[in-house]
Length: 338
Image 1 (spheres, rainbow, N blue to C red):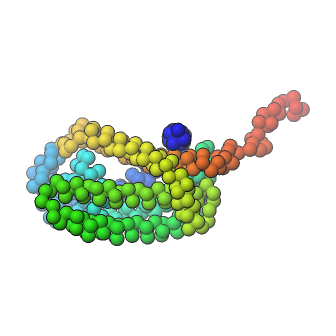
Image 2 (tube, rainbow, N blue to C red):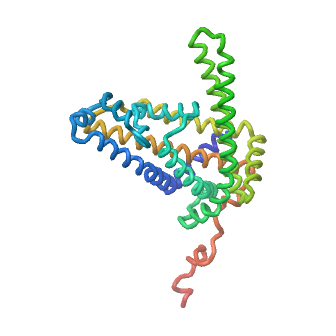
Image 3 (spheres, rainbow, N blue to C red):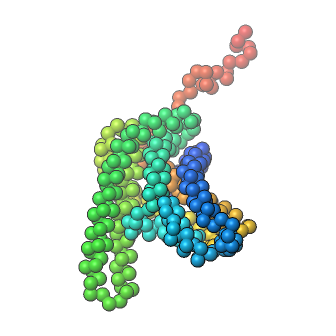
C-alpha cells in the first residue's frame, strides 16, 4: 500500500512542478539540435539536386542509404535503417546490453547531457522533496550546491558502471555464454541462454541505478557533504527496505515499458513527405516527453517513499509565514492604520 501511495504521490509531485519538466525537455532539445543540424547538412550535401534526393524524399531509398553509409563519418554513421520507428528504441537497448560503443560525436553530446543532468538533479530532488514551488533562484542555488558533490558521486558511478560493463559483461558473454552453449546443437536453446544472461545483466544494471538514485536522494534530503556516506546510506536504506524499494522501482519500470509499448503500437514506419512525416515527428516528440516524465517520476516517487520511511517531515513542511507575508498582515485594515 505504501508503494502505491509513494507512486501516486510521485505522480502528483511531477504534475505540480511543470517548470521542471519543461526545462528538462528544452535542454534535451538543445542538446540534440547541433547533431541534427550537422546530420541534415551532411545528407543535404550528399543528395544535392539529384534524382536520388527526390526518391529519398518520397520514401526509403536503400541504395542511396547504403552509398551514404559507405562514405559517412562522425555523426553520419548513426544514420542507419535502425533509426526508423521503434527500431531506434531497440537499437539503443541492444547497444546497452551488448556494450556497443557509439560514434565519438554522439558520445561527446551524450557526455555533455550527462553533465547537465548532474547539475540539475540536485535541484530536481530538492523541488520534489519540498513539494512546493522554490522559484528559479532557489532551484539553481540548490543545483549549484550539489553539482560538485554529485561530480564526486559521478566518479564512483563511473567506476561502478565501468566494472559492470568491462568485467561483469565480459565474463557473462565472452566466457560464461560460450562455455554454457559449447555442446548445444539447437540455435533456439543458445538464444534462450543469451536472453537469461541479458536479464541477469539488466537486473545488475537496474540495482546499480537504484543504489545511485537513493544516494542522491539521501544526499539532498539530508544535506550530506560526503558522497561516500551518501552512497553507503543509500545502500543501507535499500537493504533495510528491499521489498519496498524494489517494488517501487519495478512499478516505475512497468510504466516505462507501457510507454514503450504504446510507442511501438502507434509509431509509423518510413514514409514520405506531407502529413505522415509530421505525424511521425509529433509522435516521436510525445514519446520523448513521456520518457522524460517517467525519468522524473523515478526521482519523485523514490523521494516520497524515502521520506515516508524516515519521516523527514520538517523538510517538506510549508515555510512558517513571516512578516509581511504572514496572514496577520491582511488583518491591518484602513481603520487600524489611522
